[in-house]
View 1 (cartoon, rainbow, N blue to C red):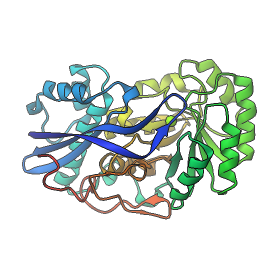
View 2 (cartoon, rainbow, N blue to C red):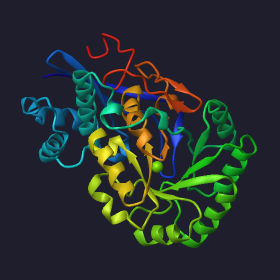
View 3 (cartoon, rainbow, N blue to C red):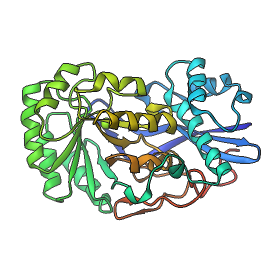
View 4 (cartoon, protein in one colour):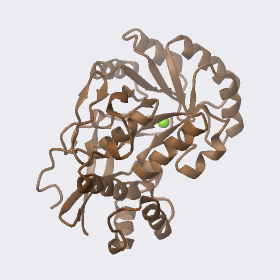
Length: 343
Ligand code: MG
């Protein structure tokens, strides 16, 4: 195996605020793995609050004995091996998993979605995220969102209703809400959830603190719309303890160590009768196509990464009527790779 990587600062179109912080770019580690003449691409999106960095990613990549990884890839064993090298660090592990999935598809001459049993005809629409901002900038951002059939709104500060009213003055599309653990009083939260339901909100992510399972479960019992765990769930083993506390989960490849474990999480949650949203971090087309390959297995998709950023180094994924179009190409179907990207 020949490994190349590239530190890449992915710039955001607008400074991005959620209930706890603001940022203007995201450090990525792009990965190129060549295996017996076949090249696969992967990506780690290392949003600062998850604790990974260029330094941790470079250190991790040096720990891997690449000769241990041979086709046919046993992803169960590969992820266990990566976990044995260091705990945590799901984003750089995801980059490796995504690149190997790309190679696997190319070796089998099949698209990744076909390998995971995902039917492109069942692709859900994807939402476009509006971060917390002034009402004036929120109006500006809504103009960028015209190609999308669903808007996801970040709430969790003190003017949640004002933000929703501003959006509703401009569009009638269904809304997803992400509170990012910002709601602290369950009585106020349930009142707000009913109000949001009347405003056409169809799901809510992470209403209260991830370490408050009782508060979130109390809301889940009473909410007229699905409440999903996001910060409260990272990996497969986390799902057992969420049963009953939420109606569903938000799976992200940068939390799940990539496509293999992400696909196991989707199946496990659905076997519990839970619903699944597949989400993303700030990502290029590479990680977005990996998630889009699994999106038909999910109820909802929130894969707006490439549309919120300015310098995606690859071609934008095919997108029509608010949905990704999965192309019949082997592997991820990533296109527009320039020869000097990994120099
Ligand atoms: Mg979220």
